[in-house]
Structure formats: structure tokens, C-alpha cells
Length: 92
Image 1 (cartoon, rainbow, N blue to C red):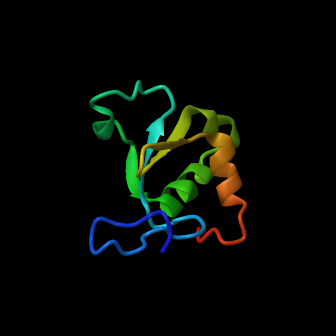
Image 2: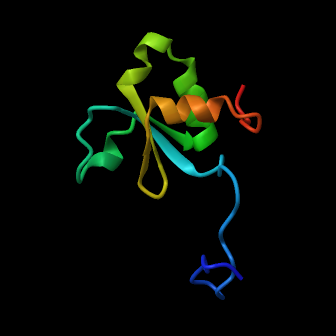
């Protein structure tokens, strides 16, 4: 067992690699976050879908957006483009 037990039967829930099916939202980079952040998402879906959507934007517009992933992680342009370039990226 690893050091990432769940609260249900103490089963191991840690998964290696990128969790492409985690929930994520596309946001404007300067939307202010805060208490109402959940309502500010432009689009929602899986991490893979949001990376695919981000990459569909023209390169000159990509700095305007971020992806907020489940677990309170905000991905910036550099991280998103790195994910899209991975061989295991399931996007288009």
C-alpha cells in the first residue's frame, strides 16, 4: 500500500501518470478566481477535452486562458502545451 489511501476501505487510490479523465474547466487567466470561481468557467469537461480546446485557439490568444483541474491545480500555457505534446495525449 502507498501513502495515498482513500477514505473507503483504505484502498490505494494513487494512479501514476496524467489523469486525462479528471474534471477540468477552461477559464480566462484574469478572471479573479475567488469564492465564485466555479461559476466563471468558460467550458468544462475532462482534462483531455480542455487541453484539446485550449490548443484549438490561435497561438496568439492562448495566454488569455488557463485550465483549472480538479484538486485546485491551475495549468498555465506552458503546462498545457507540454501536456498536448505528450505521446499519451488522447486528444485529436
